[in-house]
Length: 400
Image (cartoon, rainbow, N blue to C red):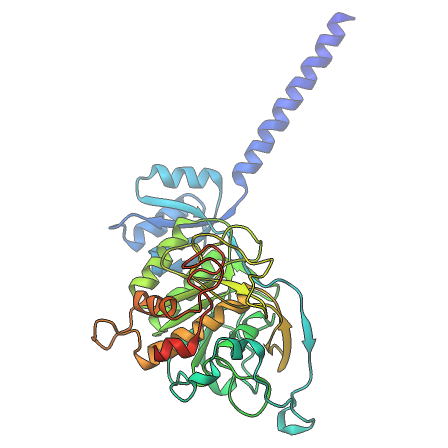
């Protein structure tokens, strides 16, 4: 009886061991999205050889950080690190549009060729609150290039299309950067909706918009696509980029990309996040202007992330703006707050009010300083964790 019991136990143990080894092998064979950054001096041919040797499937090149996005097994990752030619391997994490997911739609109000009455132009409460309308006699942002790194923009929206000058689809470069979600179109309208007697007016109604699509129809995407979008922004002369997206993970490759964009002279504005907790990335990086959200009473929104990284605040509750399919919608989120600051930054650059060195160039640091010095102080006196330096004020930024 004892012998039979021992034989039975032995069979169980052997089976468990075989199953564990099988599971381990399967785990090692499972491929994950990774970002590989090679050491300086490693040429392209060597990189490709190394990737082939470890069975990596390349997704795309990431020139901004001299890296590559790939599908890679854990075994392959270990082998690459042993090669001595790799600086680091980061996860290609998911990033998300930072909207608070409370939507109120007004669809079908705009008809091309006027088959239905178009909505009359409205000066929305948020544009009025930041005194953008008082600024248009000074600047409307004409010809300042702003990249909207998001879900794309509705390229045929009558309240935007005259200002849309180009774009790029980082998810699929063979497709247009048209918006299949709505988030990016909403952001774009806050920045630069036309002054054309219909719909709304943006902070800078003559800003040149560029649709840089890095998020899909669900409002999510991968870090590698964001980095590629940033690369396109630098190579195509963007002066400001709006990033109403984020991730809770601090990925070194993301920070390196942001640093390179900043050093290229591009002002970066990002939404702080909607968890009510810590500021997300990229807003948490020091090179980025992080924006929290306020309501109609100039109070911090309950969902708005907070912390010492916050630089400025702007309206982010019940924001009415353009939306996909030539429509409009009311949304909440720090995603809606950030584009107010982006528009203000563009107008500052247009008027050269940030040119502290008198060299006819507005650096990202000078733009940020101008915005902070002219903001309306809210909350505790001075810079604080809720409002940063205060509520952005476009008119003050152009006149004081």
